[in-house]
Image (cartoon, rainbow, N blue to C red; front, side, top):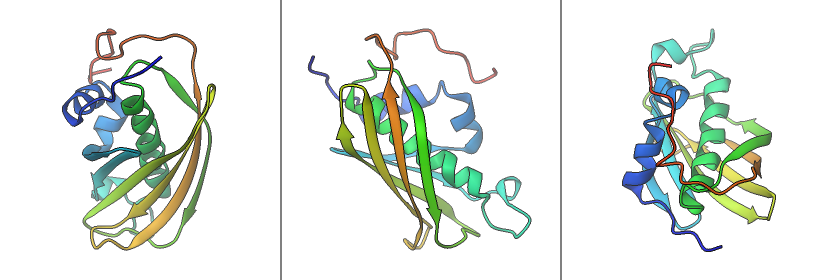
Length: 152
């Protein structure tokens, strides 16, 4: 089956129905042929005890970047789930924003593998991630499927 990739506007609409990503302040900055760029602002409530952005936030952003790239690629018609996430941290993020640029590396019939470069506001690499997703059975339009509201 051939899919028409979601536009930036459609992808942003879909993200509006994802309470966790909304709570992080996730914003889709750009769409690319092979992935997406997403970002979140540095906020005091997302800091660890050392004063940097908590590593779990970086991992969540990397995970979301690949998941959103998959949704975009399949036109919002395939559900998917993370089966593995590996992340390396290079430097802390202490201000500005965290930017994640995902690239879909392998699109199989069941599994999808994507990489993510994590950067700070100055463009310095703060980490790298590799995520594997499983494509779930069924073909449906996620933009037309009733999704939970942000209040959930």
